[in-house]
Amino acid sequence: MAYTAKTRLFIEDSLPGSGLIDLDKGQTHYLANVMRVTEGTRINLFNGRDGEWQCLVTHASRKSVSLLVEEKVRDQKTEPDVWLVFAPIKKARIDFMAQKATELGASKLIPLLTARTNTDRVKVDRLALNAIEAAEQCERLNVPEVTEPIKFKTLMEEWPSERRIMFCDEMRNAESAIHALPKGSPPPPWAIFIGPEGGFDDRERETLAAQEGCVSVSLGPRILRADTAAMAALSLWQATLGDW
Amino acid sequence: MAYTAKTRLFIEDSLPGSGLIDLDKGQTHYLANVMRVTEGTRINLFNGRDGEWQCLVTHASRKSVSLLVEEKVRDQKTEPDVWLVFAPIKKARIDFMAQKATELGASKLIPLLTARTNTDRVKVDRLALNAIEAAEQCERLNVPEVTEPIKFKTLMEEWPSERRIMFCDEMRNAESAIHALPKGSPPPPWAIFIGPEGGFDDRERETLAAQEGCVSVSLGPRILRADTAAMAALSLWQATLGDW
Image 1 (cartoon, rainbow over the protein chains, first blue to last red):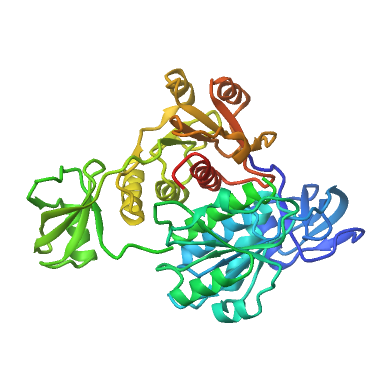
Image 2 (cartoon, helix red, strand yellow):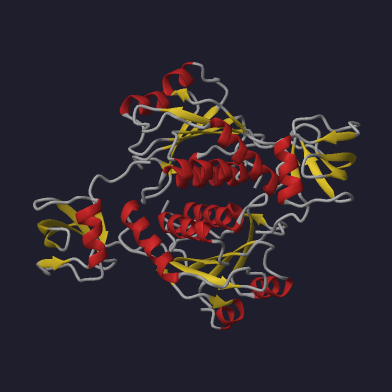
């Protein structure tokens, strides 16, 4: 699909009226040594709060890059509120899942420790970097939060009652997502649940099904890997309830 | 999502009444050295024509594996007829796209050489192996054909008039897929077109839009990478017109 020509960078700093911004080490390396920006180059910055701002590179060396915040080019908009709650998977695939989920508009990524989760060591920092890079490339104006891994039981005990659940049911006796997902806008907050290889166990399935506002959906007759299921579910949610 | 416990293997041979089957080198290596099957193990074979058959390993060594075809466990079913026509992308991502497109039920994978395609060397054999492995894991009863790369102009000149086109339009002035895709079953054959980074050029866009039965669909306000767009489009097609 089409790419934006302009380099976009996510920063924590506030943007309006902030004048000169000195970038941190990692961003300096990226701009100076990877993107090879020079004085006079213009790039865009966003921080998830103040929209997107055009900035002028006023100084660029291998050691430091300074930017002058010039003008707002896009207003901040609210992204759909849909969490992706997923059982962690192996390295390459989980990085990939973080990138794709960001492109597909997930608002929060929550690694879930289930009875059948076969890995509980999750590099949250690395997932967050994957999400930032994807957000910079896909023209999002914010970056999904990546939380620490949480036990299924703990998450469900403190589950916010107003947040509905799209339960991707690998038992496949459920309805097609497009028919099962209730229409009507604005949609309430949602969360998509993706199980581990082997699926949620019976107790977890019962807990999910018993949640008020939980909708079981089928992702078809073929068995999807967890990362494929996450992308399919996010796509269907966006097309049905989100901003597609 | 849930995985099948049983090892599944795709072979070219005919299955009904074929008695003993000696596997080729690659499959022997996979079963004997990777899966460590031994005499007496049962695995399933499928060939895309005869359904899925339970087989008994009658001999297993590092050099050769023989199987006795016992009984059919699943009838062959017709998969949805949806081609994925995509501009080739870089190595890791194109392997991944072949795997995911297979899981998501694409019936044929066609690498498309467009004006802005930045790679024209496509390892078709490797893509086919990725498709086979994914089909074995996702319980498909067939494997999507992977064709040689074809020039946009050539493909459109010989385009089968009855096959409709889902054109994923990165200009994003199109309708949401769920509303744009015509309902009604059984669906005619379809093809999903995914452009290169930078998108189709104006002439290609006009050619596609001018095709009878071409539907332009939007995949939302965020810019999707080609592989993400392919998976999103296949998911929406399956949920709207396919077997989900």
